[in-house]
Length: 330
Image (cartoon, rainbow, N blue to C red; front, side, top):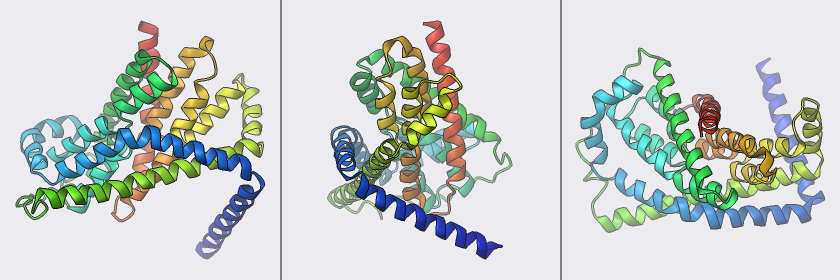
């Protein structure tokens, strides 16, 4: 049975790859334009907002900041999140930096055995978030032409993240936190120039990976649109009262966050509250493209992607609920 399942999976992957290649040929013109759009989106929005943060986090990781956090925040983190003090660094940087900084830091902490496997998976569930620059700048100001909408989405995004982090304290509550105190970080910081160069090299690799995922998922969305698959899905959901544009935008966002929100934003001012709520969910969930970026960060560790996916679904739901509450109040 295991052999049969393996063969079926292998055949399915082969079929999908073959279908993808054929689709690239059939829809070559629109695919090229989509790839260009994805590349422009990456260059204009993602690189300026994330690349400096990647360098900064790599530099901070080589200092004694994590040890300071561990000493000062252990009791607080244990009571609120059932985590060690080491969790403070990925929580802070994952909130202010953007996808996939949180996952990158968690992977580093786990690789250096500063956190346990359970802690790492708990942290993955709520520290890999969309950053303020992206939510307020790209989504709020650029896409919705409203800084206020960006601020609302940022507040509900952070509240949703912290709620997931708190709820995950009850996941494996009897965990034994593994914390191996390092003797210092001098071995990682022989000289500032060496550390700085290494930080840039690592950050370049990470930002290029993100660009690759954005481009390939932009092409996938283009294929799904031009092949009529999105229309079929939208027509099905329209039977339940959902608009076609909303459904296409939502499923685009499930695949790739920025493209989906851009599609949803053109629905119209009459549906503005619905658009904001859907955008809040998509920002919390992050999209399959971000999930693949996270997987690329943790693939060489023993961390599982499943808790991350569960956490991001709940993050999206809580963000949407908090957004509804705020919109109703104000």
